[in-house]
Image 1: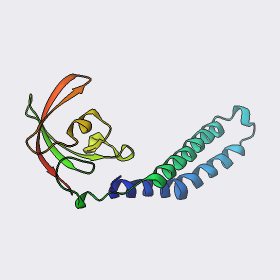
Image 2 (image 1 turned 90 degrees about the vertical axis):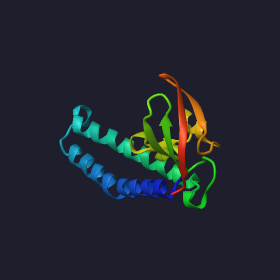
Image 3 (image 1 turned 135 degrees about the horizontal axis):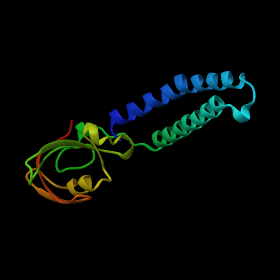
Image 4 (image 1 turned 180 degrees about the vertical axis):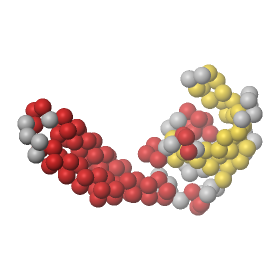
Length: 151
């Protein structure tokens, strides 16, 4: 995982533990005061949210405990984890830039491409100027690698 992804998960974990967890505990206590818990929608909703928060805390702690932080600035050469790759769709001439990142930090809307995605798998090991074929749900796509940076 990249340093930025590690930091983002750490920040989320701190927020969940220091803000979300205490808030939901307070909400559960307030809902209990309303009486009969069997028909108390506020209580059940708060308990459900607490379950989600606790699950997310465990998930993030597990990811962080196994994470190996890689600094892309120390890398170079062909496309690999951490690379920021500028590609052009050979059919539409549409240019896109993606950074290849680990699954927990992937966010396609923000240009963070999951290393397990078909496009990332096709790009790995390729160099500037290479063309790659990618099978997508919409059919075969061809891309040319315009640049590879490690930032």
